[in-house]
Picture 1 (tube, rainbow, N blue to C red):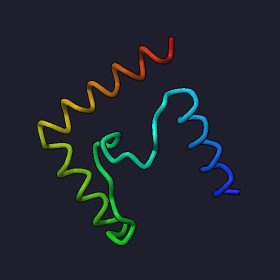
Picture 2: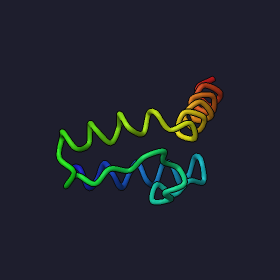
Picture 3: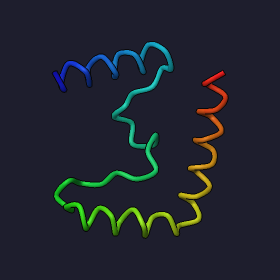
Picture 4: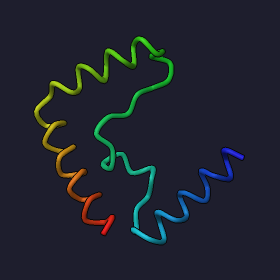
Length: 69
């Protein structure tokens, strides 16, 4: 079911937005699950302090707001 859902989501994003979900430039942060819950939490908190991530996140929010209308 998860694989089917992922495939449908990929297809929709490709069709509707011409986006490839494997394109790493779409993401502010990618965390390897091997980092564990505690490690992932630390990475997220550290990333929140990086100015470039803050700026990129604001742009992403604005884009999502425009797309929602």
